[in-house]
Length: 260
Image (cartoon, rainbow, N blue to C red; front, top):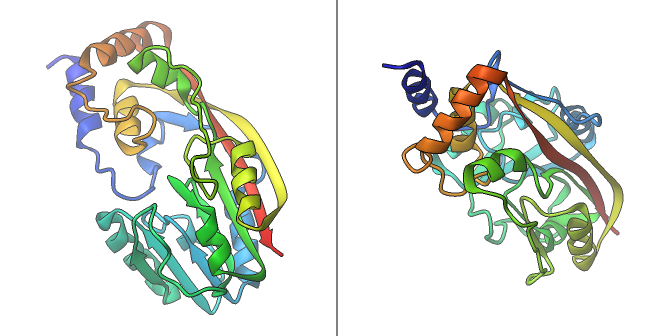
């Protein structure tokens, strides 16, 4: 087999369950936001009485907190991740519930003083506001519009800037802008108390890393498969062999809102 085919096979074979990115060590890098989401999460969780992590993945980030609140719950939509999260968060006696990303949250009103979410696919702002207690806080690091568009444009051809009309004023999706998120939060009765955004450098050092990334982060190239994009992958592999890593930029923003 050629080096390209070897790398393709390797990229296709890596499991995509959970949000553990340790496989990328030595093969891809991503600059981290300056605000330190994990540190902020740990601080908020240590002070909370009842907390909810929406779209927890495999519970990797939530599981890193040193101190958990007395009552802790998490939701996840993908069944394989639900089982991973239950094992990861068992040390906190956390309740992990399988919930579709767009569905109502299966919790009563005014139930949590802290709700968090890292890179949610969808944010149901109305549901966040409903389950938060008065003066409760929502903390989220989100994927901003145009994230990793260098890969998207190369694989799919140049894409026009996404138009995100707020058909549902209480819902935003991955790739929304901080302005859209703020508008939706305020429509749900929340006060935005912190908003920050950054563009972060990413480097991919081989085509296996690109393939695994696109299989794992499914919104970058919707419907991605190796077979459908083999020609583009081969061209990108050739570029990397001759010129070095592919550089792209992830867009991230932090939003913190309070129910007042």
